[in-house]
Image 1: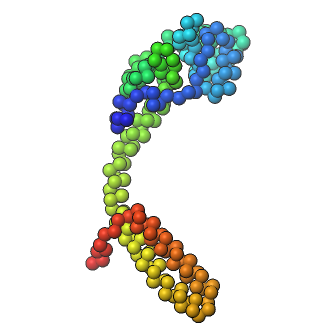
Image 2: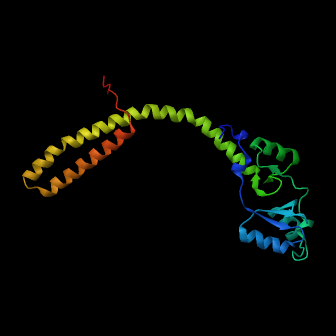
Image 3: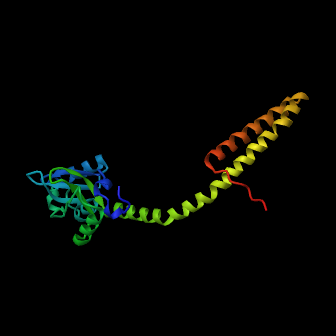
Length: 212
């Protein structure tokens, strides 16, 4: 996958929150289908099964609910936005954004002229670009932090392991003197120090400690 989000294929960012309905269906049935599939968009098809229009939640709200129309008596072809603008599955994010700008639309069905793969929205593409910009911005800082933190973590792991080894002596002394509770606690601390030190060593890098 290319590192430039604008050159990536739109097929990577489609979603399936849509339903396909014949233009002779009424709005009431359309709302039921949308609720059942938790869909945000209806792609309306003609007698040949080809996309002829598109309907969103706002279309239903503005053209049916707010006007007081009977949803059983209104066909979806009467409230759809048309002609429907589609885009090829081979198109890039840049192509899609330009198409949205030229046609003043916020969502486009992705097709191969036979099947409808899904919907891409302006919001989802904007999120992709925003995330990519942030990733590029912070990548050098993450590398810098990783470069400087690994030696510190590695040396800290060595110190913890050394401390764990030193604690073995008082643990044996406590055991020899019959102080079982103290010996158990010391052995537990010793184990934790050794395990933590081993883990830090595995992630970090050992470098000479410059204490001057």
